[in-house]
Structures are given as structure tokens and as C-alpha cells.
Length: 119
Image 1 (cartoon, one colour):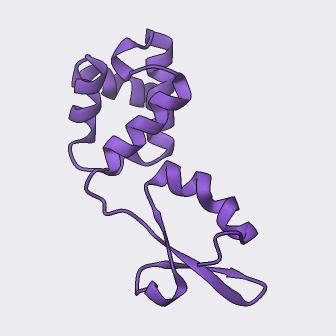
Image 2 (spheres, one colour; image 1 turned 90 degrees about the horizontal axis):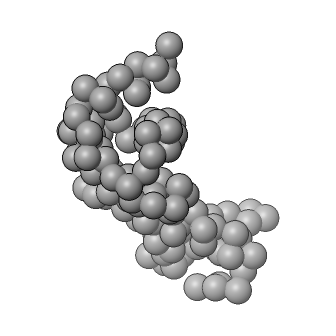
Image 3 (cartoon, one colour; image 1 turned 45 degrees about the vertical axis):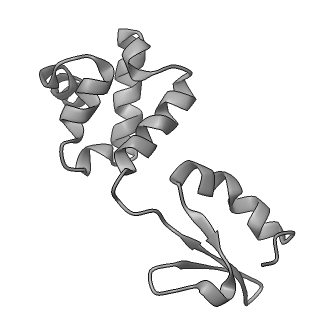
């Protein structure tokens, strides 16, 4: 794989954030995303399975805010809910319950934060 290629270096932060992985050109399968540079496929990206997606999204929000969801202030918990919502976390099954558990708040609190965002 052309690991020195500029497109490879460019996508590394994206791969780290999403849990995706770089795939050699000869390993690209249906569902993988080819990385094309000036008409030539230089590598591919294989996205992670949906299983564990919420955990990866939560980890990213915790990194961005600098603390675990449960340790955040009320205001930062509201920011975290906005970030999670922007990343589609609440489209996943049981996300409200799992985020509530991670924050140490009730489901009602999560719904209240989401309702405030969408007003």
C-alpha cells in the first residue's frame, strides 16, 4: 500500500475517529470506499460494523470535551447531547438509555435536552 501517499496521511484522523481501517487496493470489497487520487485508486477504507458505533461516538465526544460524560457539568452534558445528536447517535437502538447510563442521568433528562435542542 502506498503508505507515503498524501491521501493516506489526510484520512488518518478520519479513520481514527470513525474506527475505520485502511485497506490495500487488492483487498477492496463491495462496501469499502475506494480512495482515488488523480484517477488512480491508491487504497480503500473499510468502515467498522455498526456494533459498537455508539461507544465510538461517545468516546469521540468525551475526547472533545475532555472528560467522561458522567463527570461533565450540566452545561457540558447539554453540549455533549448536541454533539451526539449531530453525529446521529440517537438514531441507534437504545441510544437514549445507554447515553443516560453513561451520563448518570435519567432517560427523561436526555429527552429534555434533546427537546430543548430541537425547539
